[in-house]
Length: 163
Image (cartoon, rainbow, N blue to C red; front, side, top):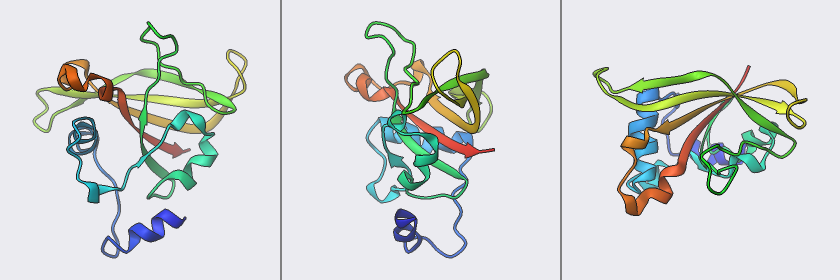
């Protein structure tokens, strides 16, 4: 992967990118949404995830093997609704399970939510389930930045994992 070769020269031998859920929310997603993410922390690619099939995503990632991270906007299915549009190039991502709260380091405050999604080929409701799984991380609405930055707050971190 071309992007990984470029990044490998920036990090020491043996570097692995395995952030915790709390780190993804506080150190990456929050800083991305508030435009305070340092430019030299370019380890998470910024793409529109739903324009691609999951098997095309590894080449879009800046770093990783078997697990990749992306910042991706979350589009709405309907202009005035809140349902997300999760249609992809040749299928769709379907939410599974319940949202899992991500607690602060002290375990007192909920700082974000983690949701599992599975990729289905075809069109709903007759899609065929695949082995592609994605974890979606998002800030709580109460944690969203000020009203002037509201449009940027729809950014999400995606972690794609092959099972």
